Length: 423
Image 1 (tube, helix red, strand yellow):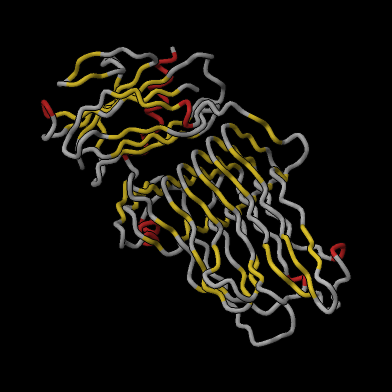
Image 2 (tube, rainbow, N blue to C red; image 1 turned 120 degrees about the horizontal axis):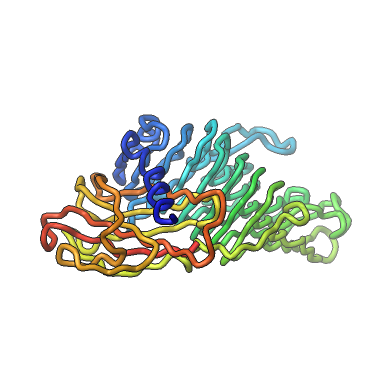
């Protein structure tokens, strides 16, 4: 029976909670220290704030507390050896906000802003927002990921990609990802007008649902040819960044994926000025036949809030689901705004079956449930629901709803809204 499958899937998804931990990082806390102390499959809850670059070396989840999105930003300064013999440049490249350095497993990033500005001096090389690799899968959910930008657009800087990883599979859900724009102030030879960065550059498969992924834009600027070039035909730099660049497949639905604009350059020297426009970036820089439209059944449009919450100490608990719900995919389920350190039960069903319960309403019925759970110190429970390798029958609907022990609630129990998902 499908109901038995749902029970087994939820048990499998939540079993690690018995040994895994939820680690809380306040706005001014040390996120890297939390990562270092975590064990595989722990979840780190980050309560807002601005955080220094981190290295993730084990499979885990980093989740921004709902309503207080944290910012992970690069180090402040980036400088590298001059690319042509002016001399005098030191070497220092800014650290990426997130560097992956794992050996298998899944990293899930939820509710984060991964971006920031870099102070640079004369010549610089910006990092990506997320770089590295080694893991089997990277899930990006409800995040804003932007390649680092320049605080002071003078001199030269090489743009980088928003996500630049060597990894088997990336899933992007309900997120915005934007590649970087280079810097070149006026009066530089045209060979130092650099291309823009890609939105996503990877080696494996990419699934994008309910998201916007764009390549970075080129510059609109001036340069002199100083007799280094003859005309636009000799100007080869400045292309727009690709939306997605990979040797694998790209499955996408309910999303905007676009290359960035190419550089528009006005060139001058001793004669009349002239303008050159470089090509825009490709939406998909992938092998032929590897772009696959999908219905993205699990995008935002197919996850819905059914309602019937019963308030507790902080008002109505919140319960959300996200992810593609495609065969084999990981789909985050997050309970938040519930009483902290409280016992909870997860009710589920394959249909709506409303029944009165503890002063409220269980939209999913009271027949099927999993217990016990314990909310975190900030009133959250989060885990991934992994779908089976084969598709569920057409028309399948999944319902779920939490009941949380809460002394401030009617009859001492708060109830989350029910959610419905259609794979």
